[in-house]
Image (cartoon, rainbow, N blue to C red; front, side, top):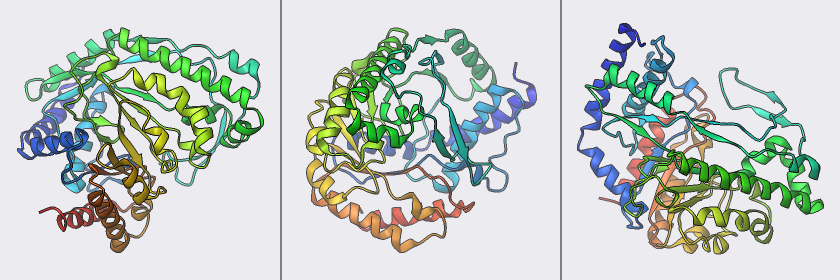
Length: 407
């Protein structure tokens, strides 16, 4: 049970949350994000995500006071939303309900990550990793177990009851599901190390084909299990830090109703032919099963876009700070959402207004010239050097720069 003191804290925060959710600007922002995802060019959406929250506390506003474990989860969600809105809301949307995400267990692949870590900030989750190679033979790869997904409906019911009892008369409580996140080449290095993976793409391609084949089989199994256990949801607001709103997905909880999110960040520097052989050919069948696909994250994709466009339901493409923006815009045109990732280094230390303005101006001009529906999503923010004002200033400069082109 959540204590009366914890309830009082949550209720105060929920009232503030509700007041934001009822503002008319929420509908405008939601509709604008939907138009962009529906390939209707408009003023770009700007979002800020993946924050170094240990550096964000201003005047104690991110200090959690609840004692119950789930009350603290609820408190963090409410406080973090209010905090972002107050200081660097950008174009975030506050939905008029409190979400409870469907819970499930994943049995794993029968292998635990074995690594050493180094950190420069004990409070940060961003650390350097050195992974032990545990999948260096065919026998080890073949021994990997198929993950078993088990929906925890009892936990869902408990969390919904707790939330409704605490704040349900203030905010509706909605049980929400998930989209599919499939990034095998982000995971495989955890069991081998990045260098070993890249070397074996050349020196031992049979082993690497067996490895990605196993991960693909597991990914397909997870997708089907999640669909069968009612864990999916077309109604999501956040698609890996970007807006998910669209009218081109029918409401539902089947694979055909949801977003498929995929990437191969390790493969920035490998050839398009090798990328197709070890990534695209394996991810294609899984992507086709879903309603829409969002591909790419930190990897530079300009050399792979021609083949990437063969994914029939491709809708959004991530354009990283290390990609050539003009080349990406020319190739994507008005047929795909250009999801630009501004350079997080520009907020990591001393803020430089000119650098940010130059970057944003360059993207605006090339996207307008090529009629791209586009968005700005500042993410992967490892640090702001304990200067939250960097994000406040970044948002201000970006919005002012966009104002010069969109009246």
